[in-house]
Picture (tube, rainbow, N blue to C red):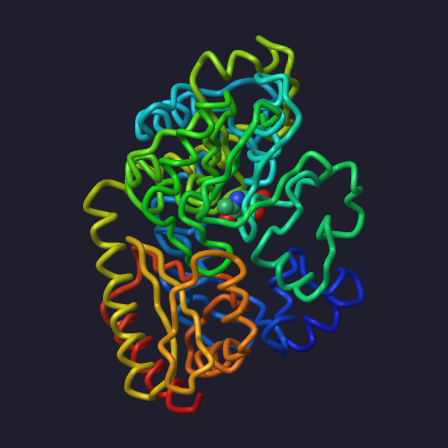
Amino acid sequence: MTTNEELYQRGLQVIPGGVNSPVRAFRSVGGTPYFVESGRGSRVRDVEGREFIDYVQSYGASILGHAHPMVVEAIQKAATRGSTFGAPTEGEVRMAEEIVARIPGLEQVRLVSSGTEATMSAIRLARGVTGRDRIVKFEGNYHGHSDALLAAAGSGVAEAVLGTEARPDSGGVTPGAVADTIVLPYNVVPRLDESVAVVIVEPLAANMGLVPPVDGFLAGLRAECTRVGALLLFDEVITGFRICVGGATEWSGVTPDLWCFGKVIGGGLPVGAFGATAEIMAHLAPLGSVYQAGTLSGNPLATAAGLTVLSQLDAAAYDQLSATADTLAEGLRSAFAAAGVPAVVPRVGPLLGVFFGPGGGAAVEQPVDFATAAGLVAVGRYPAWFHGMLDRGIALAPGPYEVLFPSLAHTAEDVEATIAAAHEVAATL
Ligand SMILES: *Cc1c(COP(=O)(O)O)cnc(C)c1O
């Protein structure tokens, strides 16, 4: 039998850091990553035969849980018909119809292969439509790893650069690439001017822990963008098809000009999408001057998986996800309270996060922006919490800026076991 350590050591020889996406390397929690042998429903099993109740769920890409039988069957069937053609397929049309039908105000989408591609393409489109250069993003919001968006990007990037003054916040990104990127604090409506092409925002921030928008933030952005003729872009790569049927648009009542999607809509396969009104989307090639393309875009296996997932996501499904998240959040709060561990457990619908505080009797305030989130992360309690839970068979994301992703496969027993483990771990913190 192979071990996690053996695979990790082999990986380190041939893959930088042994992983294909940095957060997987456990750098911010320490230790050796577990290598997944298989997953089923709420569970993953590692190569050593240990089973975990999994709240990573591919950072939200697996909303039905792992290896859902309907998704597996859809992918298998699609594969027998051929996995990519370089010609359009019915699945792409159906997928676009299903996405557009759910999101108020959205008229057309283009499918891509990742969230990164979606945001990168949407930014280019916004610049092409407005003829302006500057983009506004918020500190601690993550929008994938295209050059112009790698400034104060939260999540795995925050782990990499915290404590440095790096701007841009990745090597290899030229100052020129981010020269037109303005980074501002989340939850404060900025005053814009007519040089701004687009304001990109996570409408419910979930890459600096869970940080909900304060009252008036999204509506304020909408009004300010409209005032100066800038476009408003909701990056819904996490929130889209996760928080409710109509995503952040329905949830907040604020309608942006551009949307980006990913994660959930791929059903575990590589998919992203960006969209807008038909008028805005007409600026894209082949109709307009903004070029954007992809050999595997609208891939038949991915659309088959995505369509199957979307078919399961009705209002009842979101009620179930929210109820699961609520029970879990309540349970974690009571575990921390019982042990006297200072913490806040924000929950919005199906999403929840955990922030630990410094203690000393002071109540922990829910963070409202990256500075306040980072202040709590700097207290440094997350690694002990993470490893305590992992040792008890509960897999959380190996980074303090990530949220928990309960799936439709998580049962009441899973949640109960998670809360029981949390009580044990909290007592040791
Ligand atoms: C994950 C994520 C992305 C990037 O998506 P990838 O598929 O990893 O490229 C972009 N925006 C948000 C909000 C995300 O959470």
